[in-house]
Image (tube, rainbow, N blue to C red; front, side, top):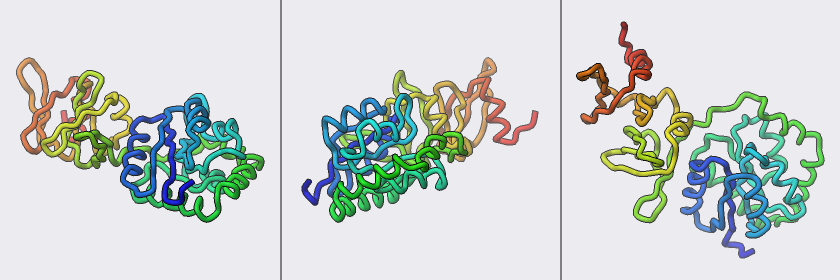
Amino acid sequence: MPAERVRVLVVDDEPLARMRIEDVLSHLEGAEIVGSASNGIEAVEMIRSLKPDLVFLDVQMPGKTGVEVVREIGPAVMPATIFVTAYDQFAVQAFDVAAVDYLVKPFDDERLESAFERARGRLALEGLGHLREKLLAVLQSPVDAGAQTAPALPRTPEYLERIAVEMRGKVQSIPVDQIDYIVQSGPYAELHSGGRRHLIREAMQTLEERLDPRKFMRVHRSMIVRLDLVEALHRGTGGDYEVQLKGGARVKVSRSRREALERWLGVSR
């Protein structure tokens, strides 16, 4: 492996999480993204066919977990691994001894960059042989049993901090704090940010679950708004409601969501 290049495979069942990791890595010198997988089965196939130097591996995925991926590949041939997990520090200790590094969701760009640089440095200094010995040791030790029960532990909310979008042929990352509102547009979600629109292929339900409810509210089946931009709630003809945002934009509010918005606004009935 050339010392200046690290061939990376990204594995995560959440499309936004994969895009986020790929976006950050695409701007790092020395990182070469060779592929991405959305589940453990794909991960096994791509590790075997692409033979990456480094894998960002989600721990908890449907069908086959990250640990099961490692077991199937076998620690003797497993690439260097950075585990990605939503578990807290205590649960992650089991993975820490086996991996080059780990990332706890939600993580910022700087943490991801430092994990990559750590992996790059250790690959150059120690090589894969030593790292695989550590991986084999943890998979044979009782601590791995603790990792298997990790889903029962309290989880840190996985709220998005940034959303990756494609703009003029490039993938860019938009902080969610810069998003004004989101509109469903067929199979896409249309992000409105500072007068610009960005399309991403993501379901509104997924976005609603991944955005911090203290900052965002779904006010209609096809509309999510940033709460600190809400100025007023207007009642139109026919009993329909609209919410007015700072800057003048107005968006529809469904009757089923109106009460929740009124409670947030402090409107008494």
